[in-house]
Image 1 (cartoon, helix red, strand yellow):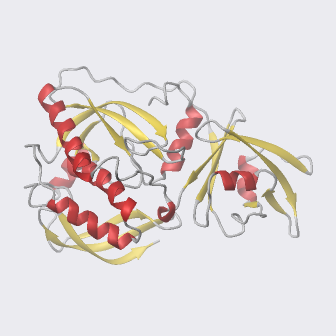
Image 2: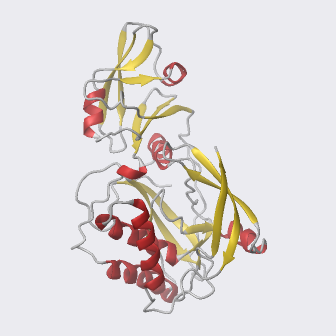
Image 3: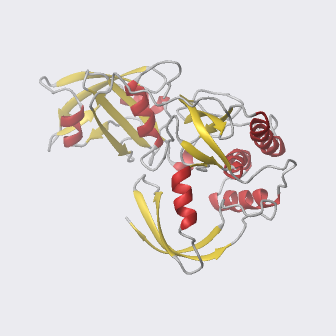
Length: 344
């Protein structure tokens, strides 16, 4: 995995922690199925999000848009590809970058399986090191303008330098490489580990709100990193709608993939956590097809809750059909389900 041209293990680990535990990032050399419908769904989501506020309106409108859009090119519903390279990046606003954000994405280069180009084998990292990390969903006191950040005692002991004086300075870089200084102290009755000075500046700089997730990690070399995972209801989507239409987004995705198939050349996709997972491991896909899901089959799926906790939905398949009449025999969103129970 390349990280903006460098080999930075701590950056990679911070990126993955910010992406979340349920996000699957393919590996270089891995064989996958690329689903254009899912890629289009990611692009359309941004266009619709800019205009709509309530989630159920976004979801309904997005489904309507995807069902109605008709391909202007004859393209398969899935394309078998090999992963050629991966770059972990930050500040994803599709084609137009307006401001600096902490949103992350992976720039993945794919080669259609028909290509004769040699696929690289994954390189072993030489600077792998043990890390300690913690994540915390922010409370009202954490985001108070005059407040401080309360650390769990175990997290402070495992992830911070040993506190031998009343206070110490903790310096940590964010995903942009910017350094933040926090004053770590132990005080109060009962005593609590706190980030005091420096925390308010960080909170303001990152526009943190209740429900966002703070990420902290420390490598065995003593270097520290900080990151955030924005709550799903407060993610930044700053794409001015006048710059690009949903039609051009849609056709651009399809045309790029089709050109790669015909010319047997590489094409690039931007893969964003917490949106459509349109790259599926080939063996996992075949295993799913072989199971022959039918009406009445039961299923168990993992999702990320509002507080970033893992939620398991248990339900029943009530329909198997094409999600869109314009994409015949496509497995994308082909199962209609009803959830009957969820387990934390």
